[in-house]
Length: 484
Ligand SMILES: [Zn+2]
Image (tube, rainbow, N blue to C red):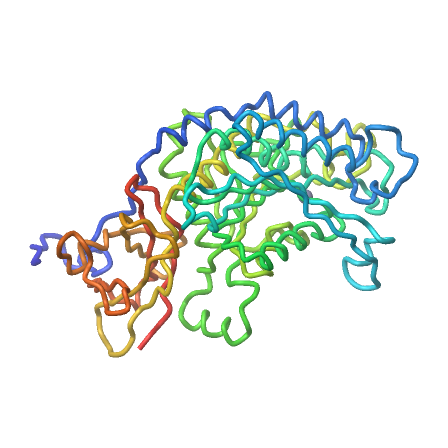
């Protein structure tokens, strides 16, 4: 098609990357998803966090303190979380499978093992909402928070460690997502997790990620929430309750040095599957933010690093096993209210207390988590074997891909792209507009792969391919690897 160009020479619209397609568009809002996530309750989150704090300490090491008063320690906390999941399951006709992943961690002399004084039982608690489509049920999306807490002394299994924000808030997000999303059914599987052993060195999440690997879970996304309480220290004018930070690794943690070199050479230093997951969160926010009213949602701020300086989180354990995983954290942390004994010094209150948690903010964070989970679980699986043909010098870009396992027959695809220096996707085009279409189907290669040619130079942009379902929900994007 020839387009008359009336803009002045040098105008950006003349460049190939703007001459075709359109700016990235929001997804259609799925009313069932919005209705479910509107049920997220700040009041319930408040009750959950107060209940978690009432266990006095949830230190992983409290498991082995023999003379704790009844009702104190991680053990009754695990029992209570388990009972919550079971109650949600009862309310949905037994729709949740409530499970524990438990093992005994032995001490050691190196690294985090030094934080394990003796054989220590570590128990993750989780609930599975199994996908309704047998072809898609092995597609799994997790939301995680860690149940365990600590105070100034990581070896103290007895003293107060309220952990209201770190990570009562993240645990509350997992529970609240389980409660409201268990009222819906999805073709793919959702898992709601309360991890143990995080403060000792990510032990619970490492164990669960290994279980997932051994059992062959096809994990599409892990949404880890750690310190999402929106600290409310009086007088802190730099906190921002309109936003949440989303951390993601730049290149996959399990890539070999040679693979990392190749990724960097291709300009894929910011396109790990975890980072595409983070971009999917911004796509969800762009599409759904207004549906929850003026103050019902948070705006995600992409942080292009694995985590904050000197800190780690449970998403990393999943990254290590090759799974996409991101971390949500409040905009501005107050370090007097994390990993601190409860005390007052010179009039300053230390300790991770509920009085510094904004429960309405936690509810907004739960909504962006739940909406992302529901949208991804409604969308088809992302495409696989996504390739970009580099057999000859060409200002056009030919892309190929295949259906993800279990993709419904009505799956179609959108090609997205962005300038190499842009943080997020800027343009899109429906692949059907580029493909040779006949009888309503793409023309395919003999091996069943889709082929399209985009009149945009691959040298100036990064492409991604997203799968789209009949309802318009979109999978995470997959970037193409070169093929000849
Ligand atoms: Zn934490």
